[in-house]
Image 1 (spheres, one colour):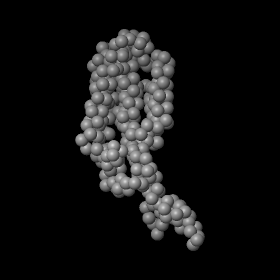
Image 2 (cartoon, one colour):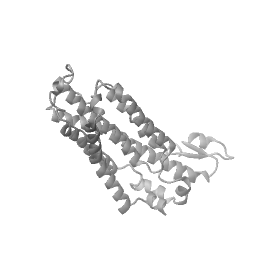
Image 3 (cartoon, helix red, strand yellow):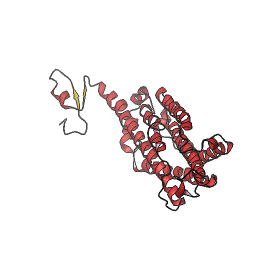
Image 4 (cartoon, helix red, strand yellow):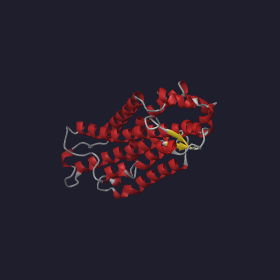
Length: 275
């Protein structure tokens, strides 16, 4: 029976350890079952749910940027973010902050055990993983990807001129492309870090360190990215205002929608936290 169940819980007793050895989880007292379900069970569902959807967002947004660029360049066979930019985005710049969300929590153990109804909601669409939340993250990714790359191509003069020659001798055309990539990629990385911060419910030292380390690592590596960035342009006011303007457009509406939604239709765990 234990092995046929979705999750088997065995209790060590005087009858022996056969049940506990055949189970997925083994406990020594019935009283421990409450903590196993309403606390560890809740975290084991909600944390991977948030992580999985954020991984989707991280990958989809960069794919949307490439699509917008390809359309704008009339489908020239050119990769928008090349070489170490892709490696850095997938590893040093965003991986630790995204994965640090596994230590986030919406309520503490005392509240989770005091209100077992919160655990019941996990199976009723309140667990953070559903078709609705999936569609929300896909929509946010498409919106932000289109805005980030679309506005970078619009705001940076000559960003798409001579795209077919971007790997050529580094003339004026290639310089415009580098400036566009400088703006677009910077906004992309900072946008992902801010999105992680927006999703945090309970701040943890691991999350703070991951965010600060990722941002510091990106800032420190910029001088080494001269092959992809126009470093002189990065130090100019024109670069700064373009990055800030695009970030405001990309992050403003999602933040407003999230804030208004929490105010008008707060979830049960949010009501409990405010009580």
